[in-house]
Length: 328
Image (cartoon, rainbow, N blue to C red; front, top):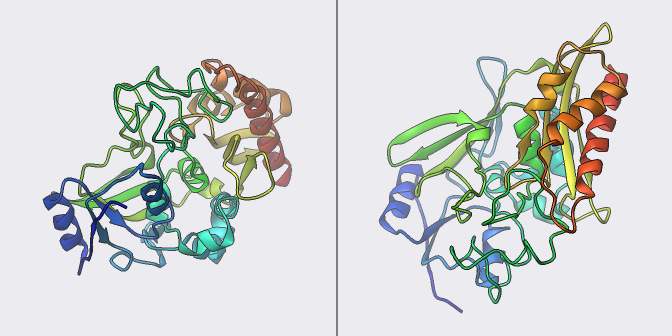
């Protein structure tokens, strides 16, 4: 066992300062991901700074008609919130598709966004992994890669992002609020996660010491007609092979607006902007939904064991959009 120190900060500024002073320190909220990785020897922080009680655990109305989700809101509470279920149903569905009831009770909104990408080789400290040890190689490229990326990967890493919640938030145009050494900043959620490139050890764009304090959902009218669909190898407690979060606005049989995001296909939740652009102004029918999915997936580069993800993603995009078009 590697020893580490534990401290409970008094406020957000104190937590940020504590991390800045300790280069190998980590924030601890629910701990459902970090503690597991510490047990495996993948994460070895010198210090943990407990922030569970420092940020809001409520969902609040914003002046613009949107919602602010405190970073400490448990996944189970967020999934059950009436405003989320009625105005952003894809988010509630995504949360309920993740993990187990016990983990959802403990996992937080901020922590869920910061889950490390999942790969059996990254979690096995006896194997080469550029994410764990930059420059050592990527075992998954020639190894067991059924669950790995088909979009946005690099020669250095082909791991995928595991969060269901984050996929829905990408489709809902969410914003992330963080507090760091230079104060507070707010930015689109698509700027939070990053593709591996030649620095696969960096999952996000956050600087050391920056703490997620909230997530804002804008007043997006089409979000009320949204859905999350997840395909996995077993009915519960499994990461997505492919998932889709979509919101659709159809008027007189024509797509007026649409949002689509994919999970299980890249190092970060994948916003399907090409498919969205192809659909706006077009008839809302199954043929166009399939065609838009094909446009989004034309740059996919599958590995030996995961070429099935391309037709799978194509079909669940079309099926989800078709369901939404029929429900309006």
